[in-house]
Amino acid sequence: MMKFQTVVRLALVVLGVIVVSPAVEAKKGPKPSGKVAIESTSIAAGVGVSWGDGTLRFKGKEYQFSIEGMTLVDVGISKASAVGDVYDLKDVSQFEGTYVAGEAGFALAGGMGGMSLRNQNGVVMHLRSVTQGAKLQLGPSGLTISLKQ
Figure 1 (cartoon, one colour):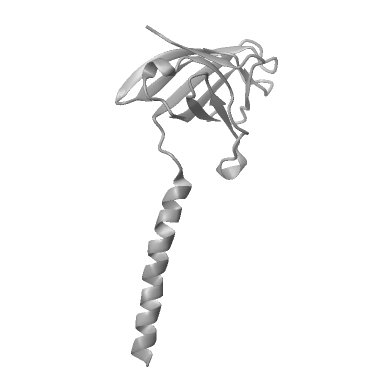
Figure 2 (cartoon, helix red, strand yellow; figure 1 turned 90 degrees about the horizontal axis):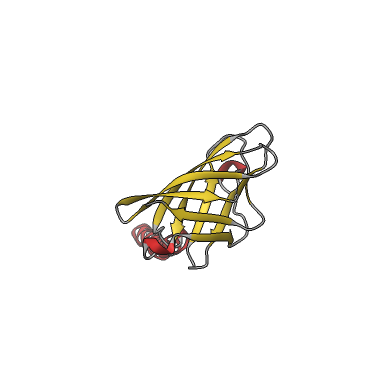
């Protein structure tokens, strides 16, 4: 009888792993197409006019780009860095354009926030600030990205 109970318990554990594994995989969501890193400089901290440069890593290559329209909300911060993942990018030419808020902001571990953006080509970026205390915000007309030649 004891042997039967052990076999049943073992079978339930194995069944639980088989059932939970796809659920965990499904929660992970889609894989990013690429990664971005942005360095932004504010003209007047707290006012919000800013510009910056960034790097897109896509299909084993790096592409340099410039940005306009991201604002830094905290007074006293003149430079900020952000990193993020890029989704639904099939060709580097789709990366350029004006990004607007694509989805509600998302929460990160430790209470940090992030920003989700979408451009006219359906490319989505999830950005998070890596500068302590910096709060990123979109300008009134969104964030414009231009690839550098």
